[in-house]
Image (tube, rainbow, N blue to C red; front, side, top):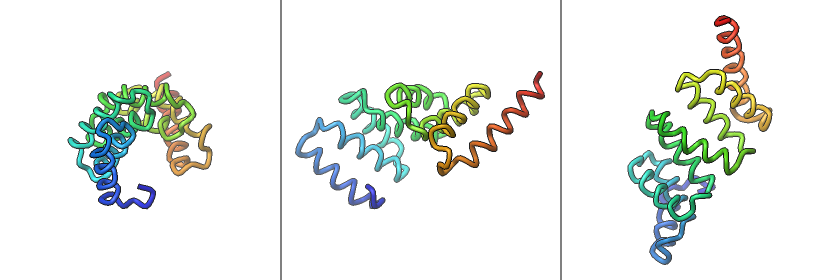
Length: 146
């Protein structure tokens, strides 16, 4: 997976599941591979199966949230990103995605808080400049409403 060789990773995880069908980690990583290949139905099914076996896997919840986000289903992405943040509150990218979801759902003030937390955790992160721009726009919007 680190090499982004999705077909090879898919084969490896499927083999692992042939040996141990209830191996949650293999299911969750296979779900991520499907998501990265935009095989959304397979990804969702596999991720949900994996999370039934390991409900506390923050990465599985995060991937499920990204899947729903990519499908344009912000409302469905919300619970998964919320669970991700409960399990791993110091994961900067989860705060960024939470901000995007909240913004899409019209909750600008809460989105701003998530973007600010992303910047606190990853001030030089890949999306730091974008997060700063969004915060500035949200502050202007908030000031204009007063």
